Image (cartoon, rainbow, N blue to C red; front, side):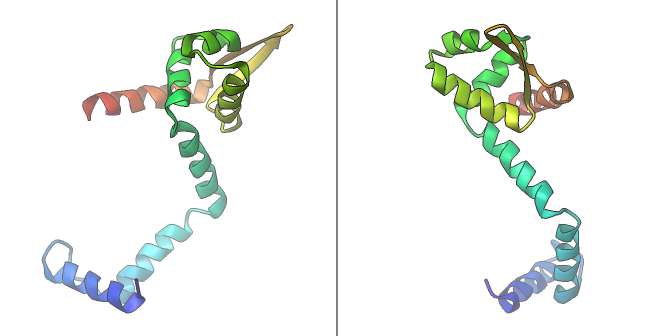
Length: 130
């Protein structure tokens, strides 16, 4: 969409009474400044985080781990996944920091990251209300 067309729409929006009267150019400048406050690195991290949660299998893994630490083989058995598929999904969740792992001999145990647990609880509450 061209800048001119966007500014015309902003003017119509203000004229409709749905937004306070403003100068379209100033409003666009204000909105762009707001975007500049968030750097590209932060946006990229958020993109990775939401990508990691945009998969039913990974959401099911997160649900399983909300009840406590599990071995990778337990996740594999609960979701009837192959070992490579389980490792793939667990790796994605671990890389974005949603889960952590610890090795005990040949076994790898996963759990929800401590800083993520409260956030997940809020997300579940929001999902239940929708």
